[in-house]
Every structure is written in structure tokens, then in C-alpha cells.
Image (cartoon, rainbow, N blue to C red; front, side, top):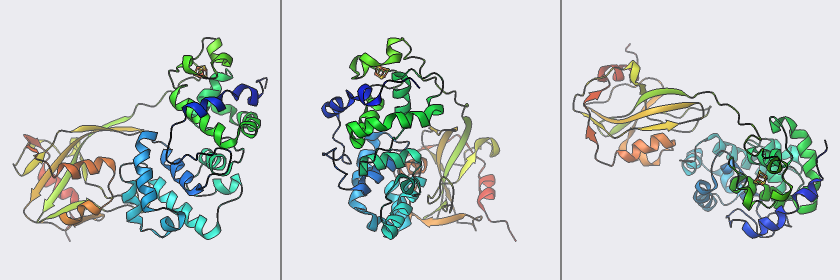
Length: 363
Ligand code: SF4
């Protein structure tokens, strides 16, 4: 490894961060001392996994009002926790956060990186980030942004993640020299605002010493990983209502969507398109994009004369309780639409086939 010493190469990041740092609610003013509220750092880091800063800000504020410390969160009702997370996506993070709070209340904060990494939901990156930002440990936190910055700075060919162990070792002296919290956040900030996939090298404090910039290689370092094409589907997203009650899928105990109530969905290809019977209201659809799939969704309200015995996993829920249920982003959207005028539908799914799919098998 013939990389320049990290404290020298990264030194310009410290004054730059002092000038440009955004005033975010979870950031301590004093970057020399341990953070006064490690719980706030933990919450912010879990929320920031997979989610943009601007989206996280209001959620973080509301969360801290509702669950101001680990003890309050540890005791909180699971539905309230999901409700507070509603709209942020990747709901496992909310459950991990609560489980981490339970562990912290029972056993106190871990006193090393391995202990932090053992908390629910904290992978190596989040544990290292919390270690550096909350406790001033020189624990190198390498996420996609940091890998991109360092790959360019050091002109690393191929996937920089393959050099993770070397990069961590290389970073430690800089964390010690410039301050773990300051340098960790400065690297994150640089990756998020300047050394983005299309970098703004003219505004970069490291521009004079960046090997990729000197070599004219910022466009191909690091190489962009090819993603598998997402699977596409066309779905009816359906609010079936009978006598003031809606049919919903009750939350699963495990998996990505555990804790969330969901509207039934039906693959359009499986449930035909027939002339609409008139008891169906529709709203303009949208495309829901997930990491591995794309759903073209058409939201519908279908009024039925009477409820039927639902299949396992489905429940009739009174309209009055709908607002209090934790729903994912897609399903919230239909809940909000129910309060707005829709439009009649010309072509609809075959109602009998939907009801058959949702009803308990007859004895
Ligand atoms: S000079 Fe450009 S490529 Fe190099 S670290 Fe700065 S923004 Fe990134």
C-alpha cells in the first residue's frame, strides 16, 4: 500500500467541514467531546441508513419528542413505534431501534466497537459511525459515500469495498489526528454534497491532492456496479369496504414488512379486466419503485353489500381505526386517497375473483 499518510491527505477536510457543516438536529456543536446524547446519534444513524437527510430531519424531531430516550423507546408499544416510522420505509430499522433500546436499558451502552456491532440493526458501518460520532472512538465508518471519496482520492481500481480492511487501517491515524466525530462527519458530508457520483471537484477541499482528478478518472472511479433489472408487475391495490369496515392484511411477525398493515393487492394479470360494476372508485395510479421491483399500482375502492369471512391473515377493520394503523408508504397513499373524490372505472378486476381470493375457504 503506497498511499500518502491519511492525516496529511485528509487534513483540509477539518477546516472545510467547520465552514460548510449543516446544522442538523443530531449534530453536536462540540466535535471534540463525546456526544451529549448517544441515543440521538443512534436514532439518526438508523434513520439515515437508506434515507436522505432532508427526509430524516422531521422524522428525527418527531421521534425524539415521542421517544426522548432509550428507556421510553424500550417501553413503547410496538404499534406506536411503527406508526412513528410510518413513511420512512425499511421498517425493520424501527424494530431494531426498539430492540437496541431494550438492550441499552438492560445492559448499558457497549464499551467497544464489537459491543456496538452486536446491537440489533447495527452493521459494521453504523456501529463504527456511532462509535466515532457518539463516543469519539477512532472507528472508521465506510459507507458507499466514503468508499467513493477514498477510491477517487487514492485512485483505487476496481471495487473499493475489496480494500475495506486496508482502508480502515489507513484511516485510523487521521481519525485520531483530526477527531473521530469531525472526520467521520466531514467524509460523509463530502460524499453527500461534493464528491457525488458526478463530482463537483472545483468545490472540493481535497481537489489539489486527489489522484483520480489528476488522472482525469473521476468518471470511472469507482466503477458503477451493474444492477439487475427490477421485476415489473401491474397491481390493483384495493380497499374493500363493507358496512363501514375495511379488509386489510394483518401485520406479519417477521420479514421486511413486519409490523405493518397492508391493503390487499392483486396482480392484474391474474384477476382479469371486466366492465366495471359501478361500485368501484379509482384514482390515478403510480409506479412504486423498490430496490428489486417496480409496481405499476392502480388504487381502488370497492364497496360490498356485506362482509364475508376473510381468509387467514386478513381482518375487517372499522373505518374509525384506519388512521391509527401503521401502514407502509404505498398503503398510506391509498388511505389518504379514500378521503378524496375518485373517478369511476371503465375496466375493473373481476370482483368475484377478488372476493374468492380474500375469503376463507368454505367448509
Ligand atoms: S477532487 Fe473531485 S473526485 Fe477528488 S475527492 Fe474531490 S470531489 Fe471527489
